[in-house]
Amino acid sequence: MAGIISPRPTALYLTSNVGTRRLKVGSLAGKKGIRRRNLRIAAEVRFVNAEEAKQLIAAEGYSVVDVRDKTQFERAHIKSCRHIPLFIFNEDNDLGTIIKRTVHNNFSGLFFGLPFTKMNPEFLKAVKNEFSPDSKLLVVCQEGLRSAAAASKLEEAGYENIACVTSGLQSVKPGTFESVGSTELQNAGKAGLITVQGKISAVLGTVLVCALLFITFFPDQAEKLLPPS
Image (cartoon, one colour):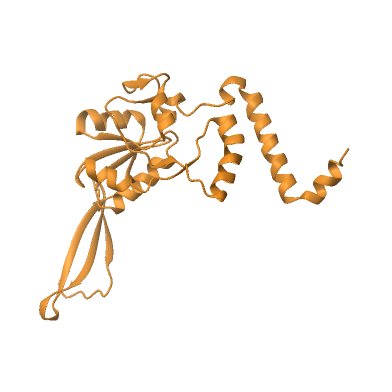
């Protein structure tokens, strides 16, 4: 790479039998105007299925970081995992938050048992307090979305050995991992009226949400369809 001048940081991607590596090249100004190169090799996040994740823990020494909210974690979690939620309960009391929380609790919270949350501002700090950047971390959540977002944050923060379970713990078969809690890992995301009334509650909840949105955004049409008595 001698003789190549790059005014901006550059990223090169290298592929081998151990995965993809990203070589980041940054230019730093040194003494007497001499440019120095700052090189960092970072691994891409690995997405694995439940069986592969089990092997990462047993054979490669990966530590499990559960990024779900407190309610799902308490229902069921992998034994010996570390709970560092990506989202935390939103208990802010400004007017806008109170309105949003009320609407949420009367629909998503009531029917599906989903808590009203916000991004955890201490997430990265909490991870750094527990794990060094060279740690091997298996990040898990219920559906796979939060773990992917958390893994991306960790990769950007310099963690080089990150893996996620594709589709989350909801895709895990009973008995795959030793777990703790009142239910199976794949059922930890199920709560609210939908667990009691099944499909009827799901349909009713959907109808009510659609009705509310229709009345909110199309009040004139709603008044024609539902004239006051």
